[in-house]
Image (cartoon, rainbow, N blue to C red; front, side, top):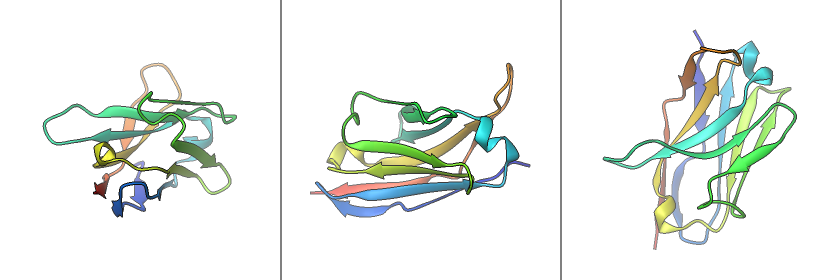
Length: 118
C-alpha cells in the first residue's frame, strides 16, 4: 500500500513563506511525475505544480513565480516552497503520486492545511 505523508502546513501572514514536504516509501517515486494540488471547501481539487523525473516542472498560472516545486529522489521526498503567500492561497494542499504507466492508479496524501491571514 502506497502512503504519502505530508507536513509543513500552518498559519502564515500574507507575504510570508511556507515549505511543504511529502515523503513516501513507494519505490515508483523516482519514476513518477509528482504533483501538488490544493482544494478549498465546495471546490474541485486544482493542480498547483507538477515535477517530472529529471526535474522539469510546470505551475498553475496563479502561483508561477511565487512557488517552487522540487524533489529529492534519494529521500523519496517532494517539496513545495511557497513564497509571497496571498489570502487566496489558503487551502488544503495534497501530494499526488501517479503510477507511471497507462491506466495506473493515483495516490494521495492526507492533505495539509495552509491558512494565509491578513
